[in-house]
Length: 426
Image (cartoon, rainbow, N blue to C red; front, side, top):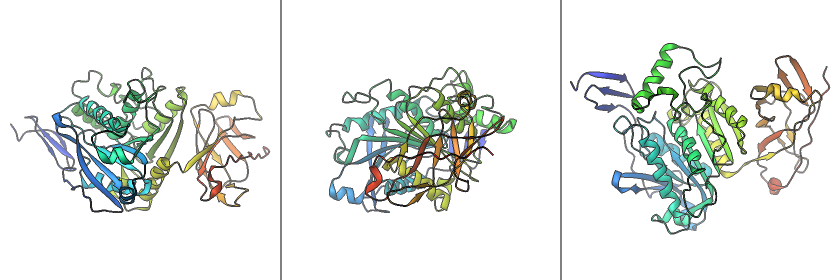
């Protein structure tokens, strides 16, 4: 009976009728090391002795010598909840690279995995790990690296795929349940969701895949991870986006970066998550970065590519605070109803580069957002802002929320004002 296969997801895993799972990837272990790699040292620390669960902590070598405080990143690995660990070559390499680029201290979390430990156990373990991390907030926790180096005023959660799903749910929970008695709020500054794993029984929009085989395979994966879920992929753990009953307005952080890949099966879910968050009444700021021509977790599979490097650079800039915001109200020549009409849709803007009058340097717009609307930008447009809506083209005089790279000199924190440019409708 042990040789009879029930689920064959080769080359990822195989599950046999006996219940045994054979994980075909993600099981190799890289040892932590106090010998620096890419300027980063690491060690493993047990956070849940009863369940034999550990975290891997990553620290820039220079900080170990100086004792400086650094932003704290808590990372949850992906793998459909079923495969991978923080100790695999994939995640050890990514966290080492991310920590080196971000100049932060990171805690990479191990959690028990289905099918041996079905949903909600991975969420429960992740919450336990977060509570353990926050025992160090006053500088007297069990792990000296966190006591000495973690700046608890700058805590970020992140994860990819299933780990991004966990990140979302931990941040929702942190808004309701205190991670530490020393906190007045959630304690989480921001989150990064890399190709987050959300799904639903039916397509989330008219651009989502309708392929029966593909959707069935995704449902099977969730059924393996959560066999006790009566709603299947409409379970609120996985159907965060489409389900109207799932309220995400209470997300417990001030800013969110959603990273999506153009060819990812999850791309529409991920774009719609950002749109739902924006419409929900949540008071923070959300930004979406889309990588063209790439599939799910491409940066983990091919970490040495230019696009993978771009992803890591953006990941790091979010943690380091290299993106700041000019915020103004939107003003239109046309009637205010245009804003309501386009709310939640993706509009395409043509923008020129922003010129800082103090330094004379040019900076490409990274993203422009009108109230309730996500916007993609390019750099080949003319002066002014052009919005495209279903009923035609409107050229508007508007101010917007403009995100540009941090200045690399002393002007980076000045309260500079960006005047919007306009172009008459031809």
